[in-house]
Amino acid sequence: MSEIREIQVPDIGDFKDLPVIEVLVKPGDTVAFDDPLLTLESDKASMDVPSPGAGTVVAVTIKEGDRVSKGSAILTLRMAADAALATQNQVNGTAVADAVVSAVGPPVVATPAAAVVSAVAPVVTASGPKPHASPSVRSYARKLGVDVSKVAATGKGGRMLREDIEGFVKDALVRLNSSKPGADHSAGLNLLPWPDVDFSKFGTVEKVALSRIKKISGANLSRNWVMIPHVTNNEEADITGLEAFRVQLNTEGGKDAIKYTLLAFLIKAAVATLKAFPQFNSSLGNEDGEPILILKQYYHIGFAADTPNGLVVPVIRDADQKGIGQIATECGELARKARDGKLGPADMTGGTFTVSSLGGIGGTGFTPIINAPEVAILGVTRAQTRPVWEGNGFAPRLILPLALSWDHRVVDGAAAARFLQHLAALLADFRRIAL
Image (cartoon, rainbow, N blue to C red; front, side, top):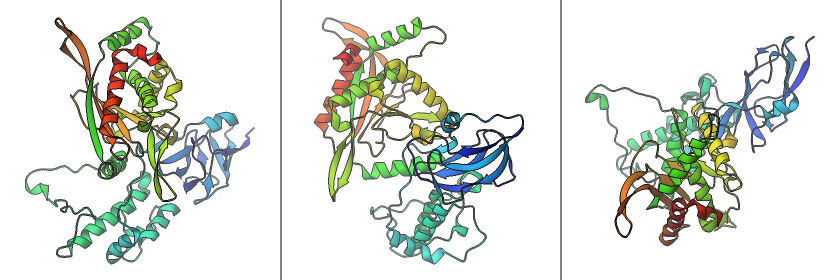
């Protein structure tokens, strides 16, 4: 005998009152387990809410534009005769699938709204067929004076995104400025216009669309690099003993034992160093029109994860309260989710400091870009065995290059140098962590 159940919004992390940008089912539709029911949108991600069971939709209790949180009713579902719905706790714990996320937040349009409206107005024409855009995106387009029927949609299933509106505005500004002799093409930065080159004149070319992650991260990295006064300090850490200890731990473990990675040790050492230098675990804020420094009493450490679609930054939450084995396990789990495109918003928000390691690939150094609103980021490249003078002769030592980029509005060079020295000392003798 079939059963009618109320389906609710599952656990979506720390987010509340998220707007429903699309309802994907209607009464009478048949759904299978994990089929998407609706799409939610936050400032960090668009995400589909999956069906926790198979059956037929009886009634839909929400509509586009509604705001929902964990536990909000979505619809009623007549369960298939041979399907059993999970318990309510399992429903609430269901992972939100197919979340397309940014490690670094939404792009920002630097041009004031009034200027955007003025610039776009000459190229906006009469509306065409209704495009596939959510109410929030349409509202954003109206605010900027953009005709959504003229905007190319790049989202999943042809859905129009906020970034598509912003891209349209930027293109309109370029066209408008290009038509004015002597116009400023620099968006207020007094820069030369970007070269407009027909590369096909010089040889065969191939055009490849950027992934959504790269579009978002590119815009945010550009913002961070331009708006944050970056300085990078370099240091070296002798990890000969640490690496021997790490290898020993992995050798002692069995087939299913924890795989200890250098990244886990780096995160643990970074937390200890952040406690010693709290200004590196902070963000700039504003209160009553005055800048303030927000010192955080928690340690959520992000790490850069390379995926086929681009770079993302999962976060190890409360790393100060976890052992190295647990950190290593969580790093592995989050890295797998990142490669599979299954990271949710809760996996990528709240970071206080980031570690970007290229040690598994190579290199001798680089300048990592700060992940705003954080104020510092640690870059690590491949360790190399080098001869080191030990007073009466040279000995082979494993040397790890470190690069710390920091925000000069918050940190000065002396503090950055001391931060790296402290970190290097911990890595050289990990027993210091206990002090």
